[in-house]
View 1 (cartoon, one colour):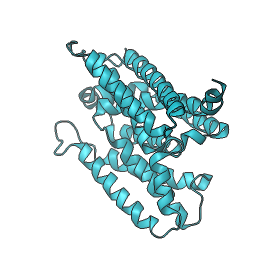
View 2 (cartoon, one colour):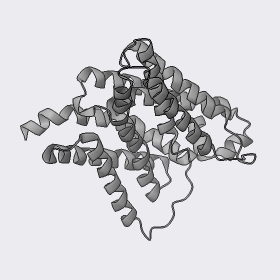
View 3 (cartoon, helix red, strand yellow):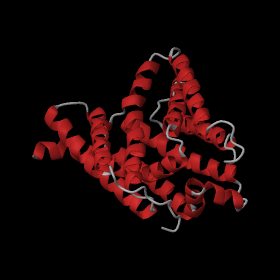
View 4 (cartoon, helix red, strand yellow):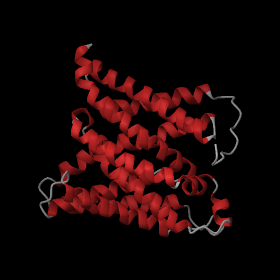
Length: 282
């Protein structure tokens, strides 16, 4: 028992820190129906860190993070500017998100060919290194997430209204492109620091699966958060324990555990009434 505690306490704490922010952001992502925005922004961050290698800048250095953040901010600008009103929308924004992901992926591959360690960097972005996370990394992650969380707390009415009641925001005459840019920029900052720790697959899982499970049962914001956080914490603990006992890769096993949790939740909610539309005040 002491062995598992010694090895897994760091990854477990890292998972809890990641869940605290990503499960909340996932509610916005599901409500906005931009499911793959995480993958797209993560790939933009990967493109930034790969470009940093061309200038002999370490991806985990301050300047390396600046490269990644710069590219995710560019992605945030693209998503904000391509947002159109619900009435004038000709193509789903998910199509734009997918295009950005594909182009960023292709560009990262091209850039990686010019760097001796480019291919290894792309692999690290995909799978992360949560099993070997250090206390300093967890503290840095927590500090950034607290800053992003405070930013969202002060602007929660705007962000939640645009995510949950887009037409209400349009009737109020809000500058939705501006608010979208602020939302995606803060989202991109969270992704930039999360992906090197957990990898794209696990970050996407933390964002999407807990929120999907929560939306199966409720539309009230408070309950959505409670279910997302609770399910994510329990499933992460189970995945970490199984990884230790079965001697399997930690990140992929946690992802598969979330897939099983979603399957069980889907079976449990069969026959349940469809939840009512959410309220920002709830």
